[in-house]
Length: 257
Image 1 (tube, helix red, strand yellow):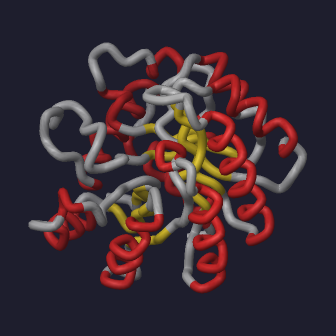
Image 2: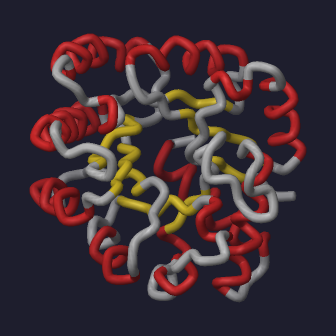
């Protein structure tokens, strides 16, 4: 099997405490050579960095403040995070972005935090991993000032329309992250991806979340990314080898792996 990059996994969370080593082994056996492991806040940094120290050849850390973690003290948290960037082998700034699904009371703060962390990415020459939920228009507007900047990254867990996909891909340095959602029976992603070329996609699991068919109801893990690849091969009418090759090339280019 060819090399595969899982561009988004929270392998450091407690759901993997009982069998983390076995999960890594299963990932390797499935052909995965790299797992990018985004943190979400200050508390998740230590377990994530410990994970990457334990598995330095496969696990790669990122740093960022997730939009749902942006609260009254977000400025202080960002001030604590930024000095850490040059101290560790972070491969991206993330998981950052906008999330107005659960709560909009910190909408302004989320926008400010996103902009600050994009500035980090430009300063330290790192890609961004962007989360967006119920915030497409706001995210698009927030990114427009950077359209001609050397900003690159991944729109994590893309679940939008074909028009939204094309609008996001108008930012030339970005890829769409596709995960288990594409396998769901009622998913509209197969149609939304019709105008999207393969050289603009990466694959991810977002484990332990968004488990693909036929494992729904179970904890997700990197080994299950094969199901995402199989579904993409069906959508693009090509071989799984072609999907693996192209998405791996795309991910390695974004993260300099």
